Image (tube, rainbow, N blue to C red):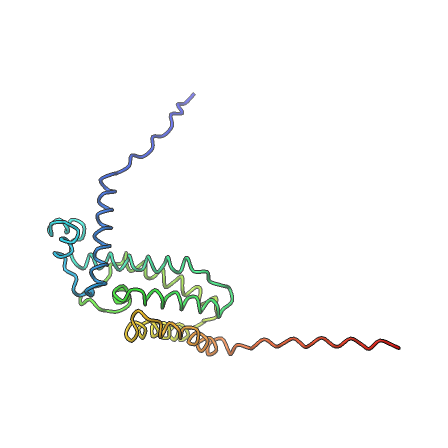
Length: 218
């Protein structure tokens, strides 16, 4: 009979695990720094010192500042993808639109630096790599599927939707950071958009009162 020796489990690559853990530490520290000082103020030398590392050693993890921005770009889009995956999106069109808008605007409002990196051309000369940009494309495609199911059918509908939602996010970040001035307008904005694209919602008609019982015969 042929040998039935069980396959040996793959040995854990501890060196790789340590490398990835250090890379995650660098990334998390970079996010903390840009949240405090802004994206443009990020210094690789200061970052290296913050993680107790010699500056030249940092380059073994990220070869340049743009390489670090590129990883942060992917990281931010992965988080946005998780937010949409975790959102409970109803089949009913208006509820779906409201959930998508709320998820995006609240994501944007929570982290101005992340929003600037993902959606604004804040860093001169930075262009995400095809691999990192693919994550953003996947997020957009998943949201577009939801919006198509909700009743958006042409490019003008999608353009108007992105203008409305991104406008709310930008206004919130610019005029009331940390507050909810424009977040509170999400429901009204979605209602106006849905009325324009899907047609005005029709209020439910009140049911007719029950007829009084017929008087009994004497």
